[in-house]
Length: 473
Image 1 (cartoon, rainbow, N blue to C red):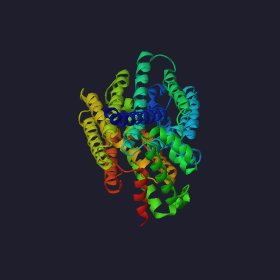
Image 2: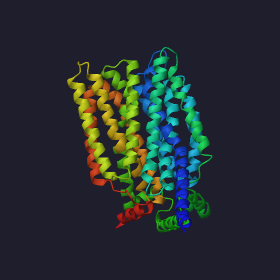
Image 3: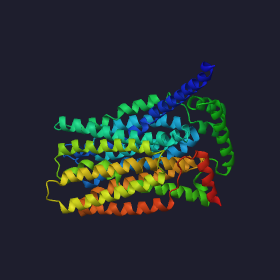
Image 4: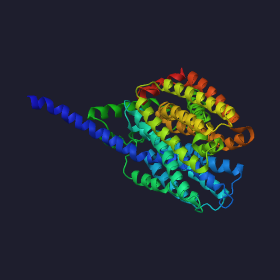
């Protein structure tokens, strides 16, 4: 009697462990897209100093901004395109083809002969970066359960910050050990080809999104996939039924296109998602991610010291992202977002004051690196993972591809503008006044988040869709 009564819980525990293990494996393989996102955006931080040299690409201030930010302009186009393509052809298939784009244009960037070739190649590489930024969170949110969706989707953000840390570390190793080697920046960029190959192989292994398969009428295949990542057959059946019911109710927005933006509740939902994306960028994260080495050199660090110190920014980003993942299912999304914006705003005020009041002090570079680390802690721990998670959650199934695409398009356009104009602001109004501009942006972001951002923690995608549809009334 004792053995019989204890057998079922053991079996259930094993089933649960197998389901979680499969979900973690799928998440690890698919988030190589996030790792590439981080590497391809972070590598410029250290490589740019070498590219600017007369014997290399001889960049002027305009070209410096365009080389840095052209990848984000391509990402804006890639975000919209991939959102539509993933709705039509599937999340997994689109990620598979994006891996070829990552591989081809990472190689092209590493052999670029001049500034304009680099700008064009980084723009084309951005197509894959933007595509991955849309498809990976959507894919993960559609595979996960409400109880772990926050942690699983934000794992992509951990991979992004991990990719940036990896890029900063490789830059520091190569930049300090082989600083006199002609074209060392080319090896920094070429490093990204390795994870590109890993993503390609990974997409041959992972399954398609079950929600997408149900949308296309492949219910049996969807059930087969869910059976590997859910605890019981009853749970699989309930989820399939719930997805089908939701899709039937969403018939009016089937394969939503731009013409559907004429419908008020859809337009409002897309505008909220777009505002979340813009808000994330104008807070100022990518002045740290793209120009961290430049900022540290402006503050008084030497070149090698700035490359090494920038690694600490990467370490803080990873640790903060991991902490945010742990908090995601315990703290409401809105609370995390508003706390994060408060922290980044105060950090930027501190950087502006320090860089103005202590301009002659030997403490200046050390205080700047300390305050940038605090900024990154609040941003990566509270704002960034919450932003991507919210954008993957708030859109109904049939609107998700379009909504994520449009929201991420404007996120990347904002990213481009920040990256392109930061060197111009720095050259014309100085470090302190430039950070004051971003303090104002933080204030505007706080007001938007407080007024418009919805709460989604603890709700299934279908429950969120029902709440979203109430906007029609």
